[in-house]
Image (tube, rainbow, N blue to C red):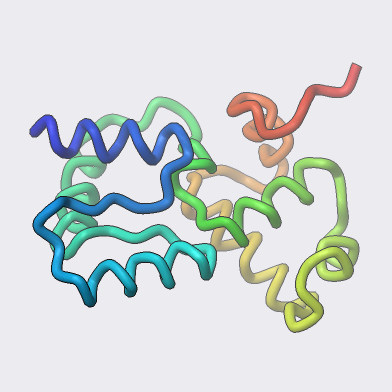
Length: 135
């Protein structure tokens, strides 16, 4: 694995939402900023494919880290669900433009991305330090 990919993976592991190299074109910087500000992760051209190929070769040791694999909006939905909120309650707490059906669909996509079942959301959130376990 290249040291560049190790750096990118480590950055995402610790919460980075984007990675740019010093050779990036000016117009791409604005695109990257807009992407991250909209709650998504920015990958340099070609990097997403390299990371996908790399992670497909790596054995999955349990659920994937939500802080790495989810954008900010999905991470917030994940955290709300982990705190025990229903889809209706999550919809009330999110942007008014997100309806219950959208939240329900996103929860399904979140579980698919993290390779977990809905019943594992709270356990995974605790595992990765997103919520404190109930005493």
